[in-house]
Image 1 (tube, rainbow, N blue to C red):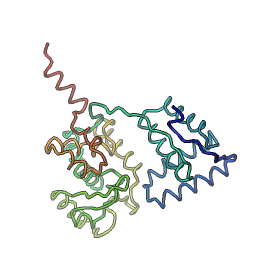
Image 2 (cartoon, helix red, strand yellow):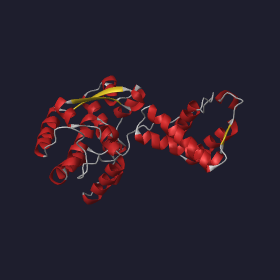
Image 3 (cartoon, helix red, strand yellow):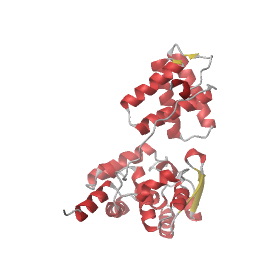
Image 4 (cartoon, rainbow, N blue to C red):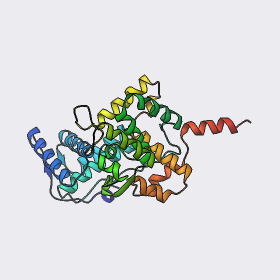
Length: 288
């Protein structure tokens, strides 16, 4: 099995001191930036490589397989594959001629932790009165399917144009569209705050909101608005978009394009019910 998973090479990489490791991680980070990877991805990849080098110190067949075994024993399959992806990116960076295989992830037969349309509309009503920045941010994610990292890149110019073009995850070209109601109301808000250009989701000091700040604030709103904290996270609104769009327009290829998915298998999850919806249906139907 090991022979199939990797190809043996003669060259070995050995990192004996913390200084060596730090220097190597910085080299890798510069490479990732040149690859135009997102800030979040760079953070995750460099953390993984830093951990690996500090704990294993050398790149060999055995050490890589030992690391994979450690991951499989202690983490969920999606996390394991994320770490393996990071290590494989590093192996390509140093011209290592083999890679670790990802593990098979069984897709759940239901959507999990997706905010309901009722709670989403309630959240919007509260935010409209209390925090316009988060009102338009939440509405923007839910009405475009944008990832939070993408939504934070929205500028006043994009609102005026009614659309936004960029390279999304995996450098896949993508266009998101702002619906008329969102474009109209957001434009009025921007005029009111005298914002004619640049990023629109910023703090009071003009600094761009971070993903962490958005995540933290959503959990805060979950507490004060008495909403389920499990569904109050940025990606929940992207899931709401995918789920609701599919319910109204059963066109998976179109939805995959709109969401920037490389594979229809990823998009297919939106053809499924949430676990709460499954439970309600079973309770209604099963009377025997």
